[in-house]
Image (cartoon, rainbow, N blue to C red; front, side, top):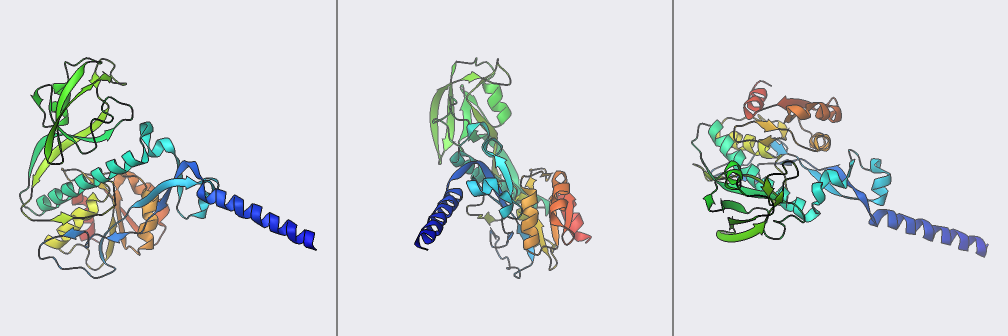
Length: 330
């Protein structure tokens, strides 16, 4: 009897140990999980706005991304709506979790400014947008710029030439050969920093010198209305459409009309809606929120409908004008 009890106890210890290992040891994959949809109204501050009723209005939806533990790696189906992704699909080119996170937050910051600009122009308000440089959105590991330039730096001068766009940066570096040093002036934390760094050949264009950064156009915005958006720790550009719709709803016509509308999509300054990632998980989040309508980019519509089921109306849009038109006619 005692021996049997010892065997059972030993087996329980082994099973428990295996469970702990599977739960706490990270794997070589990442897991993408649904996140709850949340109202945009508390995140967007507009002078004189009235708070909407709970359970209605414009909602944004995100996903949760993290390294999968061994249990999730083996049995991803333990989480509804989960997807497993190899590391290269989440952190391309050897980018670390920290770098990806910083780039994601940077993308969110810009998406907020774009959303405000698009919404105000949709309402007939004049918005001034001025190009001011080339903003660093990613620094490649072990590149010449690694440890010298940072995400959020705005390159305003290169090789003695003023830079106001990404095209301007490429033009300034046109005569630089791989291996040469380049000088740049960047705006960082409300100040200017002069840097000198080596170059290497572009993997796509061997004769072109690069420093190993990804850049986007940097702009300054002059808004006629003092609007602030605070998304906290949420990253990425995919809430742009939801933010813009919320602003139009507050300053223009009542577009939600008592409905719960979940929207996802990256906005451009022209008002176009670009495809986003994680739409399957976002459909779960929209469904969980009891959404009446789920607005998604055209290119994401098929995946969104497959995950949404029959109880959630998915509307595909390619621009904010299409989104507003669809909401007005339903």
